[in-house]
Amino acid sequence: MKNWIRPEIAALSDYHVPAPGDWIKLDAMENPYQWPEELQQEWLKSLPDAEINRYPDPAARELVAELHKVMEVPEGFEIVLGNGSDELIQLLMMTVAKPGRTILAPEPTFVMYKMIAQFVGMEFVGVPLDVDFELDLDAMVAAIEQHQPAVVFLAYPNNPTGNLFDRAAIEKILSMAPGFVVVDEAYHVFAEESFMGALPHYENLLVMRTVSKMGLAGLRLGLMAGAAHWINEVNKVRLPYNINVLTQHAATFILRHAEVLEVQAAILRSEREQLLQQLSLLKGVVKVYPSKANFVLIRVADGSADRLFEALKEGGVLIKNLSPAGGVLADCLRVTVSTPQENHQLMDALRTRL
Image (cartoon, rainbow, N blue to C red):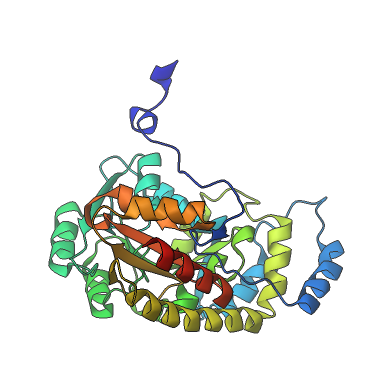
C-alpha cells in the first residue's frame, strides 16, 4: 500500500507541537493575557446567540465587516478568511499550483511556506538571509528572475528572527516579481508597521494577518486582504463553513472591543524592550537580535543551546530551541515575551543555568 503515498510526503516528519504541560509556556508566541472579567461575563451572556445547531454563515459577513474596520483594509479591497494563516497559505498555493511553478521566500522564515508548498506539489526556493538576518536583495532579485515564482512570501516581521525587513527592499520585490507577493503580518500589533495601506499601489500585493498573536490563538482565524478579483479567485478553493459558528461569534464580539487587545499589545511591546535589554546583559548570550514581534531570538555560546533548552524545561520554562535546524540558526533560542512575572521567572532561570 505504501506505493500510494507520494514519496515527498512519506519523507516528511510530523510537525511537532509540544504536549501541554505545567511549564511557563514561552515557545509559541501566545498572548498571555485573558480578557477582563467583566468582558468575559458579557461574552458568556452572549453565547446563546451562537446557533451551534446551524451551519455558520459561509461568508462570515458580520466578522468580515468588523475585520475591515479593525484591520484598516482600504476601501474597495476584499478579504478571505482562513482557519488560521496556515489555511490561507494553503488556499493561495492551491489557487496557483501547476507543474513547474515555484514558491519563493527568504530563509530562515516561517516553516509553513515550505511545508505547504511540498503538500501541494510545488517547488520551493529558499533564498538565504544575510548574516544579520536581513534580506539579501541582490540574491532575492536574482532568484526571482531565475525562477519566476508564482508567489513570494515575506514575513513582516520575520519569524523566527523577529526583525522587520527593509521596506524599500520589499517595494523593489513588489515592483519586479512576476506573481503574487504576500506580506505576512502575523505580528502587526507589535510591529506598528504595515503594508496594508500599500494595497492600492501594487496589483500583486496580498497582505496576510492573523488574530492569534492579538490574544485569540484558540479561535484559529486568519485573513488575507487584496484586490477583489484576486480574493474572489482564492475564495473558489476555500471549503464552505471553514470558520465555525463559535469562532465567528467570539471574534466578532471581541473585535468590537478591540481597544482591550491594543492595551495588551502595548504592554507586551513595553515588556519586549525590557527583555531585549535584560537578555543583552546575560553572560553566555552571544547576541540578542532586534525584534519587532512578541518574541526575541538569542544566540548562545557554541554548543550550549540544547543543554540550556533542556535545563530550562526541567526547571519549568519551555522556550523554542531552533539550534537543531542548523545552519545560521545553530545555537539559537527563541523566547516569547510574556507577563512581567513570567519574564522575571525566565530571566532568573537563565541566570542560574547559563
